[in-house]
Image 1: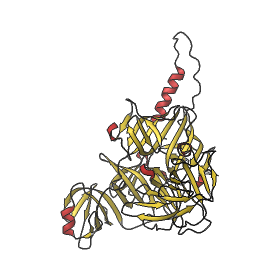
Image 2: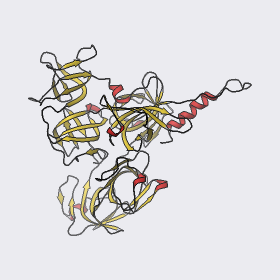
Image 3: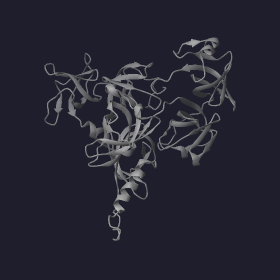
Image 4: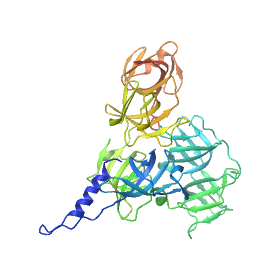
Length: 483
């Protein structure tokens, strides 16, 4: 697990436990301190379960899947989970007592906007990006009418930034369960309807489990249906109130260590904002990485380390701003430096770390996959960020063999018919297909008139060990974290 906030806090806890106001008395033995820890975010690897860079022993963990009993093998890479556990003071080991997964929507896709990288399920807008894990589908093969389960990080305006999308069926069939969670709006008691996002829900025949409360705008509920949508209305057979905070973040009973990844979903000031719906505040001692306090704003993606206080507010000790995934590489592994977590491909050294999402996409790949399973010659797909001169993998997938390679990065130099990206020369010829940033086919003259230093270009072609002969050279823009 990472040696950041948790260990720092442990030192403070242990020092406090061992201190004594009287220098003339023999200090009492320090009590055993086993702090509570809550981690909320996408699963990035298995073996045990790793989320937000924290590795948890799951031997005795209780797993719930959308409120139903589950087991660890039900979990998938990319699913957003909340993990409650403890951290040992000497071993640094984290042990999970409970792992909770709650999806955001399960039902048919009503529309897809490929240019915007989004689709709509039961009124919830689902955004996809470079870190979205697709199961039994890809974004390109998704179609309206497909039934999917979506899990992700919350954005403003009730949108979801998907981290895991599972295609359950090609089309909805009567009797299949649909469900959506969200805040009630446009409540119409006379017609017994309300909206979740843009989805109209008819609750005239529904069982209401509201804990004694009345339906009201602003109430957070789960709506379930097993009937076809009729005239745009979801015919609910059950409406249940949900505890949004407990569902999402598993608040601990008292003060506890807390790690959270998400987007700023509400922002007033640096002392009063929310990430993924969780209330936050900062102090003069808060440390900022890849930004400053002024970088905080609505829909900015961050990782938070802090302590949850008795009021349920996360006091941030460290805020890391996420960098966009400008780099894409598909190629064979040329070398591995296990001690440093480095993988080399196309002559480029890529750093992996505890936050890298590992996934085996081959048909025979193990469910528990990580850096140690890689061998020279493996075909991998990497999405990465640039941090100074370092290329840091945010996602690494092992794929089936392929003879072509892909490189997307910022242009470092131009000498027609070639460009250089991350030190790799990419050369075009009479067979190269060119596109502008609007995905329109253009000729070589137009491409080289448009391309400039620091332009983002995606290339495909054949690698000879030193350079790439490009079959495609496409100008691209960084949209939705560079999908």
